[in-house]
Image (cartoon, rainbow, N blue to C red; front, side, top):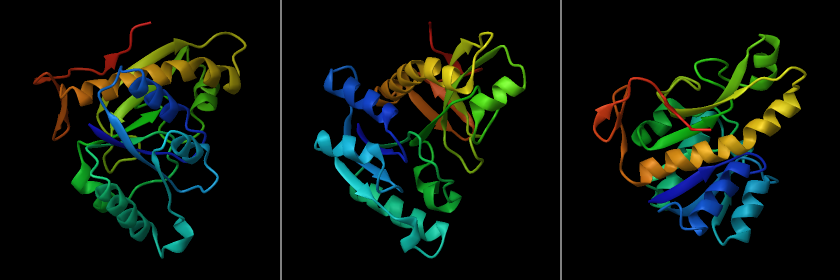
Length: 211
């Protein structure tokens, strides 16, 4: 499976995918990494592994739709089978990514549908939640609102801060994303309308990553 990763920052989830690919644990080939940030570490990481690293500057386009159409044109040029959003900090134009529905996933640091958007760790702490986690979902027009494939859960400990919560969750995020990409690469997952099929059977609830 040919995979393109979109990232705006440090690329830790990208690194997890690269490690799994190089270790023979994922039957994928990461063929490109695209970013809206020239300084994104994800681009440096891609270059260090001889993966196409592409920066598209949003300031060079008249509007979001123009940028996104160019973005997906570059992805099409790479003959991608799957797009993974891994810390890509832009809202995508629904019309631009419509041809990719069912072939584009995102990892989000909350137990969706709780806390779409930003500052998820802070919001979980402020709400007094007893658990937190991360979700991988299919991307749809609704921000962080597409059908959830799988989640990983951690308990919120007394004295947790945004930083400690993020740090403890990160390794679980990596495992979750690798597991979901593995299911997709094996042809076991599919999106039909708003329903996720696993081995042809509709999921009644998101999968849970074992401890």
